[in-house]
Image (tube, rainbow, N blue to C red; front, side, top):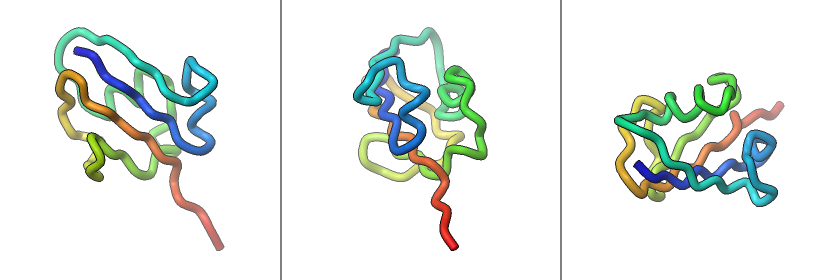
Length: 77
């Protein structure tokens, strides 16, 4: 399965490219949480997950050619 992973804000440090966009291929079924684990990102660092322009939970099953956007937790005070 081919996926485009877009890392936003401080999550860009996990990307393998300077623009924060990775095109990857993985075998078998996967969820967004599987992708987060693959990159070694703490689940607490990912606040918003978007697939193909729609906000979805981390448990969402991914399909071939999905575009996954990972955003940091929103913090403020």
